[in-house]
Length: 156
Image 1 (cartoon, rainbow, N blue to C red):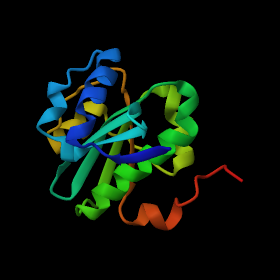
Image 2: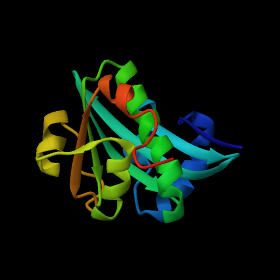
Image 3: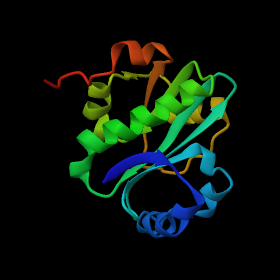
């Protein structure tokens, strides 16, 4: 069964293996597991996301999925789960970093393109720049996002 969940200690071995594929050091996330989520099929990790929160602002700074074909559905679920977590933690303005190839999917999820640069968004939250391929910023207001985007735009 495929699940989207907060990363737990029991997931670390699989997470390290997954992150290694993307040349990301697992040590970047070990001290902030409470700010990470995974998509798992049993013990196999299919996706990973991380976010950083500062005050009433937050940013989803990493989204990785094992295959591009997972993006439309699994990416949607991972993004919404992280936005929900940020909302529950008191975030009012949320940003998401993505690359140009996933912009249409992020728009369908219900986020708006931001005029901020990646550097501006990251520095506002004091988050590190972990994936240089993430070059586009989207934003949304919470909890308003869930009033409008419970069903992704463009789906039947």
